[in-house]
Length: 246
Image (tube, rainbow, N blue to C red; front, side, top):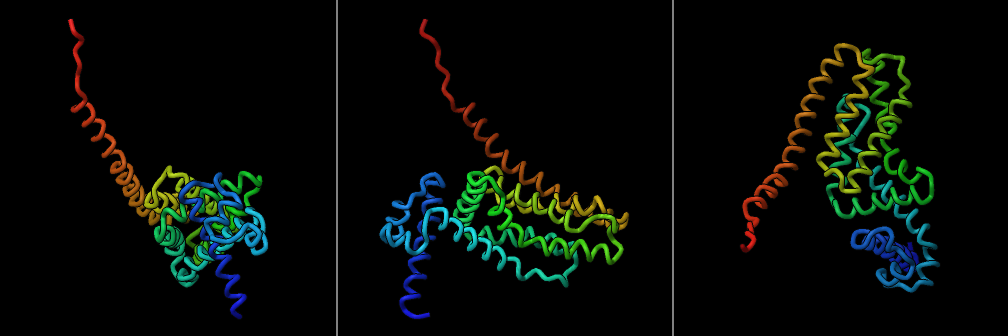
């Protein structure tokens, strides 16, 4: 790559970083070519020449996010135990998103808004679809080892697992659940889906794991409610009572 190409690559990354900064600070609806150009310290003409419209820039951002997600799941190998693979999908997503919660929360929120505005789910599935191969591999391994019934379509079941992951990512990006809740709830649902088609021996094993995860989720929810309860109690204790003058 020569100096000119390096300069173009640097400015393109500045533009993407500017978009991410605006998403974090102001949200998706604040994006405009003028604002992006100003933040990236390039002219609007340069922005269009390098990357095109706001939609084009967002497409590049989504592709970059997809590649980062893909890299996060590389350590998961098909040689692992199938149940460990399925749980590792949740753990790897958690570790990846936890690197920069504000950044990835803002980007994923924008991804879902892009999905709505364009009336299709391609950008959303792009961020989660990297896991399809892992899920299919785990399901097939379970079938081949006789721990799961053969009647289930591995592709269809993996699609249901992806839909679950996408739904939970949407809730996390909107601030409805925190990252720990995302990780444990995704594991909970993944294992429930596998248990529905498991042999009695595997179903018994999964039941113990599911109950353990359920306990963690309940503890997270209880911890989340506790400060709110204390806050309300303190408010009741310290709110002054006024008497009407007679």
